[in-house]
View 1 (cartoon, one colour):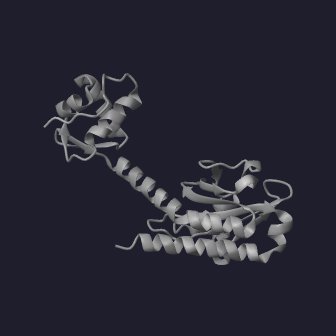
View 2: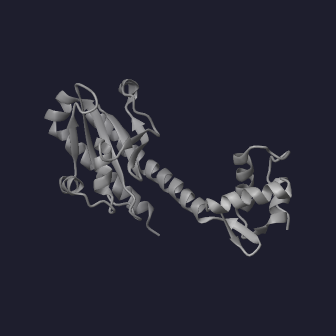
View 3: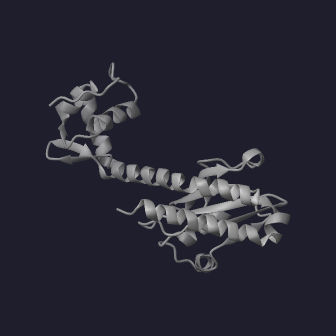
Amino acid sequence: MTVRVQGADGPPAGVMQRAALILDALDGVELLNLSQIAAATRLPLSSTHRALEQMLALRWVHRIGRDYQLGMRIIELGSAASHQNALRSAALPSLYWLHRATGCVVHLGVLDGDEAVYLEKVGGGLATGVRSRVGLRLPARSSVIGKALLAGSSNSTARDVARVREARVVCEHEGCRKGFSCLAVPIGALGHGEAAAISVFGPVSKVRTDHRIRLSVQTAAADIARRMALAQRP
């Protein structure tokens, strides 16, 4: 069997380009041998073999005898990307509602190792004055949303995290910017030890005194958790 990758007009020189072509060739097929992969990618046999050896070490491909298939790391990354897209879709209605209800900038974050990563940011005109952005990474243990994420993770057992887990809220006044507060709530367990959280960022005079803000954030988090649970039902 010969598999051809669409758009491969010549042998690319870049390492990442070669890896991408090999992954495309293996996508949707059970097994391919070295010659079939070289034919599919239009790469020289020697270059294909070197690239495959590097990808084996990274678990991007898996070898069975003389044949190759997509590796577990690629499957794990695909699963994570699919999960994050599903989480974002489930969260967006609640994020926009929370922004309208509080007037604050709203963030959706996920835990990646020991870092919090912003997956979404909603804030209208107010958001332009806040230097956060989608994809920004923060230390989980020292950021407000990170502490909420650790509290929502089943893998974290630290004492301070346990306190947050019990209170179901983290709040910090003027911790990262004078005159502003951040309040975060864990969304809850999403399976496989994964965690997500939402936060609001607004004037300290509003966040500190308006107790409805905390309730609104907790309501939004519960709504997101409920949508995710419904989406995961068979």
